[in-house]
Length: 269
Image (cartoon, rainbow, N blue to C red; front, side, top):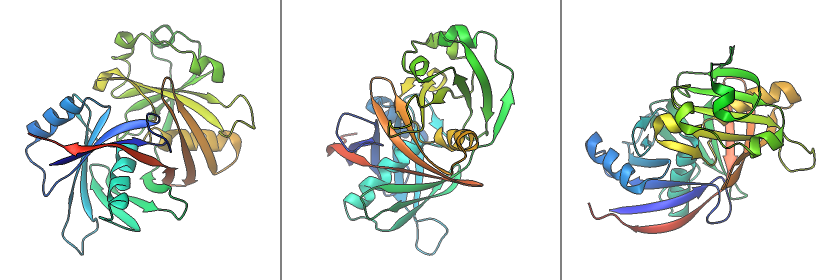
């Protein structure tokens, strides 16, 4: 069967966040899906198959890290929508049935893809013991996210602090059910982005995820409230980076980005 590796939230190869994408006729058993995701060994591998016409969704979609299935993934959804649109398999808006409900992905005239995701709730919480030491930076504030995200959003002092983090991943592993999102406002208003972030997910087998679309459903309401604007751009990443445009629409958040296919081949399994 055909397998593709797609770099998401970028317009050039070897940047953004890579995801595996397999379009199937149906889902095989979970053990096989997990083995493929472990073999691909990227932060997420997406598996999708078409659904009968006339329903609430067009494709079923699931996401697996190398070690577990997750409830929501933005960059692998973008990668899947990119494959469907770039191959002519689908056009316009594609509706995905997922563990987080129906998620839409619309191909825009400028070549970007806009995804419609549920906005995450944000609950201020006390700083977990050991968090600052594990990150290696002073913590300004901590927010818990909705269950389908499962991250802690951690505000740090400034952009330079976020960019220079060298976390203790073993120590971070027990501090959140999914991951830690470190974030700060952009240092310069003319930088082309409004806030920065980095995402660490050792609890699900990923040390650092370059560009985490799902985390931006929590970052969007956080920074929209601070900056007083519904439309923002987030810059995420360490060694690999990417941009996520966000638009806060109350209970829904639109995430916009580009993607590029870098590998297109056959899976012999």
